[in-house]
Image 1 (tube, rainbow, N blue to C red):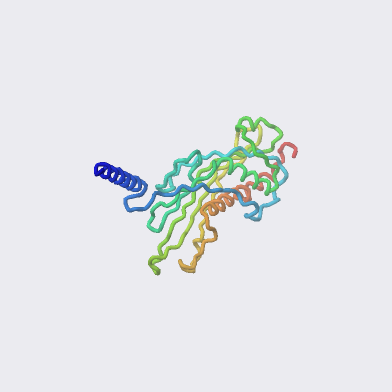
Image 2 (image 1 turned 135 degrees about the vertical axis):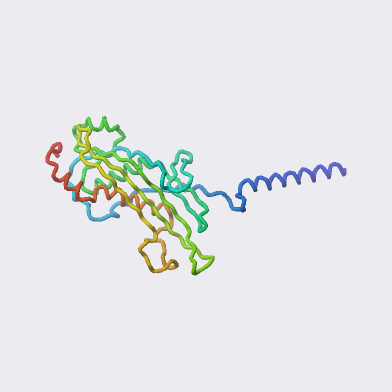
Length: 257
């Protein structure tokens, strides 16, 4: 009987020890768990950017799928590897700079393609999205323009800020940057009709708010919302520029539209 009791106690003790080891493996050396992985929705906010709606002639434009060409050379030391096929889009850091959350989103190419198409429609163009290659799209003489684009940067960083005047009280600041490289062609020519960079760097709360740290209240609660604002402004910035607008308005050699 004593042997059985001792054996049972040994089994229970080993089980408890294994549980402690497993728990230890799930935490860092300071007892804090690893960063959480969060899937977020990022998208275009229609009509948020004003001033260019309906200013372009009703020319036909096909928008190709955007290429995700990010190299993360200036995105810090965050983990940029995809998770289950979903690309990394940002990180959350506490006031000590420790990562607490990795942010992932759906593939950005289709998101940007649809966003650009919507902005082109807002501008007054007749825009359609296509998964054709550039070479195939340029063969379609029914289109006036073909737009191709690359994502150079699309990243959000939310970080805690310790208030020196109030020890133990931290506020939050979020920065998002979206940079796009855009080229527009006129079928059937593979010589750029126009090309440029459209970028937006958005801070929440705004960096020009000089009211004091404790009074700077963020507008958005989620990093993905801040990234969506930067995305919207960068996409709208493609068409909200005098040079491109004048070029298309003065283009009398379009295909009869």
